[in-house]
Length: 356
Image (cartoon, rainbow, N blue to C red; front, side):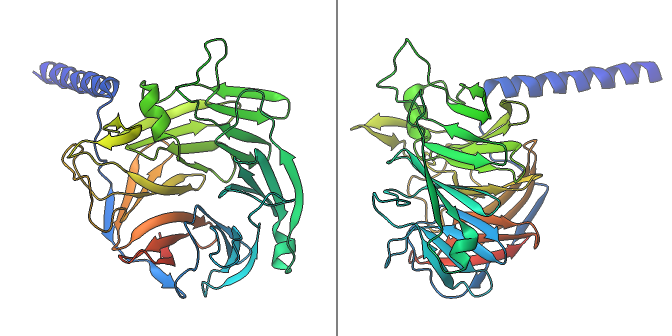
């Protein structure tokens, strides 16, 4: 009898395993279930931020480095006091001169140097944060990014190399050459990754025109999420590029109408607002709990009220719901604190903090 029960148990366990594998193959979309769930508000620091959209937050020596254009000076790099929210220094001007940029740049940092890649100029401007803290401009040099394949959407520097992220146009594809979606350079060694989580190239192109990316502080891992839908791709950068997993939460349910994405009546257009990471965790701004396919096109405020924490294996750990829109996230390792730019119902921006 015990032998029979044991065999039945293992048979059922095998069936569950096969079923889970089959579900993974089907690529089903579903909102994750988290181990811990809370309701908590961000502590607002200082007054309203007089900045445009903020795309990056990094902690540096008691201050925060924000990438967002100052409405008055038109400069893109802001050094902000993390205790008062006051802008202490600004740098990186708009223009075509040395150290200047034409569009909001992609930000990466190695030590005291920060790298700001401007896809409009196909150049990276390198600045010294210590010189900016001392009141200087901080401009050091310009790197002309001459990629032999394609002009990358974003370029990110790490301690021992850099990553190119591209979004190949579906209208100009040349069958005689393949544009690598992700390139990792370590010295003279180059690794490439060419897969997309969605096979439809037209849909993929729209999804990844304005993606969000994060790199673990040790530059050994990378995560990518699209502008439309909600798919969390996780990569290892250790010894090359390999996919750790692609977690599918909300399907990018749209067609092209008048050359623009057009969502069905019950589709949820946007899943993520921004993300940051530690060596152990990925932290994202996310939509409220909904069932894919039953949402509304015009979501009420707040659109991105959820702070969601995953590990690098894709396991959902913590979900925190607040009452404001999360626009941008940054993590301070020494404090174990999340800093965020949040927006209220009037679309005013504020700096907030939350202990994890």
